[in-house]
Length: 252
Length: 251
Image (cartoon, rainbow over all chains, first blue to last red; front, side):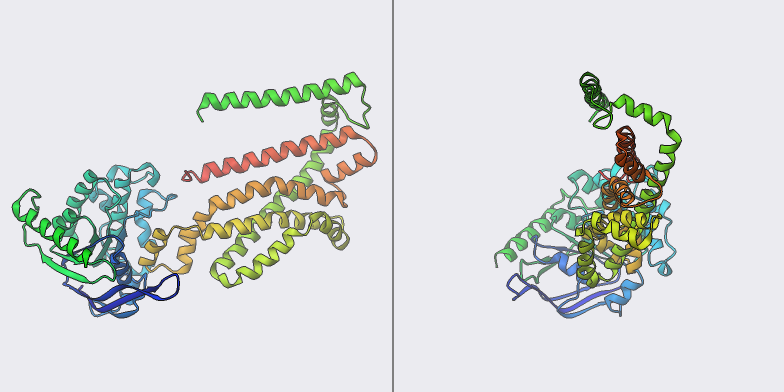
């Protein structure tokens, strides 16, 4: 399913009530099955954009189409998988119950997908299906949240810095897991991050966003075979290029 | 707190209580204080053991009123909080009414209810119910609204209905808050039942206390006090036990 964002503007009222422009004239098209990373300084409006895409916020102006449809109608079919930094698990439900919950809510839009057990196996949590979330580490909790997101069987993945709260080693393992899972699901992905290496590892294309009011300042296609080698000169070139553009777009 | 420390604290508490009762006993015996001023603890226990059926029946009546009122008040409180959760516009009106009821002294309402409704169980249930209702309402309502934003966003991304959000998210999140209210209201409901019985009842511990008081049989009065104190602790302990068993995820 294609994501297309046209002439999108968004502003909030600030404390005095005058509008504070957060997103300015955003135009993004993500092809079906494409993995696009969005990188930019913190507080620039990346999360705001993602919240608009999954219907948590209404944009002030402009249009968002998922496939041919509006966000609300895609959302009501549970076609959007949204994952953020906080695993947001229910502490009173076991790991398995947490993953199964997506089938209990809005139940008439259930797609035949992997069973919750299989998904938990896929994210390496086979032995933990009957424990409660508070007994798990942060990385494991985020894996549960990932399995729950996958259980939707959704076509669109909107990821809002899902690994930002994790340590470096856990992050690396999970990046590899994401690459592996992508082969199973072929989703259209928008991956928000402020971690350059993560973006270059994962994405087909990286968009750079400036600080407020945010607009897209660069579009870098990453044409490297996967799995990507961090130490290769091509990888380093892209990282350096991105670092440079991010710095420049921050100054203007 | 580890186990040995906890048992140490328990031993200390028991010791302090023991010293308290021992000095009370000694003071009464050494000064020959008459029964109509202050009975000794041993005398109270003897009275209690000689009249187990009398006190047992009275306790049964009072505790039934207290527990039934507690349950009814909690259900009403949770129900009212639910309504507020779905129609937040009502918050102001309901809360004002609740505070009005709460700030009217129950000692003032209790005789009125007895005049209107007689010596039966109903006025006692209303008093204990009212005592329970307010804390449960306030805590349940703030519990329903204590859900974290990431969880709410996750549920919205599944296009959950308001009812689904309430049932799977808001209600379980509010349980620790509701238990906090019950731990306050539980012992209060016993007080409520006794106060209501003082103003007129055909049975119950309040009635026993009133009879003992008017006849200056202070050993009977103290026996009832002992039972009430034990029941208050017992009810609190029971609530803590149920809470620990069911709300294992808290902390």
